[in-house]
Length: 162
Image (cartoon, rainbow, N blue to C red):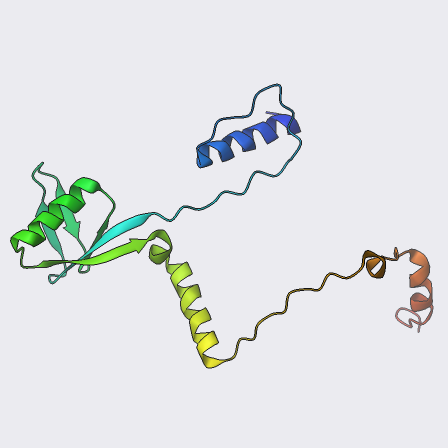
């Protein structure tokens, strides 16, 4: 199936809009930019619980089972949070609330990256990288490279010529 570049751009834009939750552009509006708009990542918050038992099942009033694995249970479901908080208030012996965690806290690569950066800053091995200085545009003029600059280099070369 062959798609024109305009069709592919509209498809990419509609996927971006769907991810962000906005509506599509009007069909008569021309697509002047080919890059999708940057998507802001919204941190989602989860409630975290800790169990003194390594693995545990807790039945909700609806009959659904909550499975606690490796001493922890993380949820963002309001019904589950309300039920577990109520059980803790009633004195449920094996469960405690540990706090709120975010999406970035749950990402193992992100937490590893943050730990490495924190250790490097604490040890003093990381130095601040200076931001690049933007100078006058005349000082930044580029000279185009051409094959004429290669001729003296090639003449001095002895590779292939024995």
